[in-house]
Length: 414
Image 1 (cartoon, rainbow, N blue to C red):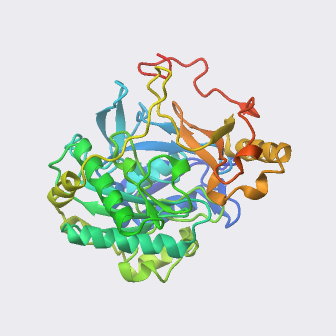
Image 2: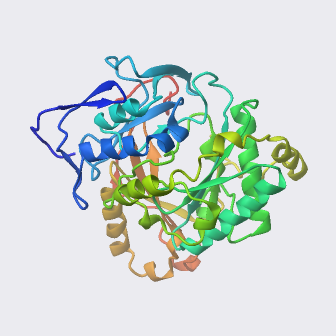
Image 3: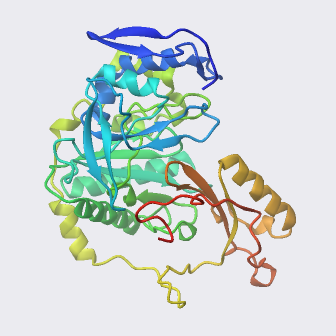
């Protein structure tokens, strides 16, 4: 967000005063949206946004330097948070814990936006029961080269599988290139069971449409397909919830849809301005989601029927690390995505002879979660390059170390 000396504005939101600093600070230059515009947007769609994020502990994903800079992730609620912000203490697999923010009303939405948050990233649990998710999340993540119609086809396949096991799926755009399907479940199962159920759903979708969809966890093995990302149901994961504003130049929104709309709409139609108008006119298509609570019994029974998922081979160097079955080389590790893309371009310039053989899904630029922010890894899958022409692993074009100088329980190398 750009610097601004505009005086703070105090908003009265349903009887609660919320201080908005630098209200005229421009957050999205392209549509000209300010911080105050974003606050008003979230207040306008509060009923729907709180249906997705209210009452859940959330990670604060903050953009203090604007949408063109990397955000940082803040698990711990600021010590000086106001009384209308609840908290819940989560215990992570790393052995750490964090007292996280829990918002319950429109004032809470305004408060997180004032901190520099654009999208809302809640955990799939309620603050009252932190060990038993009440939401299964189906994340349809397209590989490069996959168009919208293929994502839609996979979404309807996922709906078919959910119908077969007695569950109701509620679709929404991710706010980027993919689709999310949310499923309310009774809070009776552990994270491990919920993740297993999600993985089983992904495997069944792949079984019904091999090549169109994939449940393969390793990115280089997916090809030009839609990855049904079951790992978004792991304990430490969060996803952008309904009505979240995403950090794209057009201020795109992760928007709930009816199933009738999934095939006839496109993600770019849904922005802060259009969704605010849409919500005022038609309300929230997910208004009934909390009344459609289901059971995981069907998916867990299918898991037993399918048997354990195939495991990746392990390297023979005693490290126990997974060994790729694809001819992968690593190109770079960088702090930001623009640096990653620049490193990729540099590598392509050095190996111009192999570039024509690469398919879109062979170029892997991955955002990797660091201690409090993302970093980027660039790899190239040489599967479509004739073996005699494949470049060897070379020194990285860029070699950023996201862990340098940092120590905490469970950190890499500890």
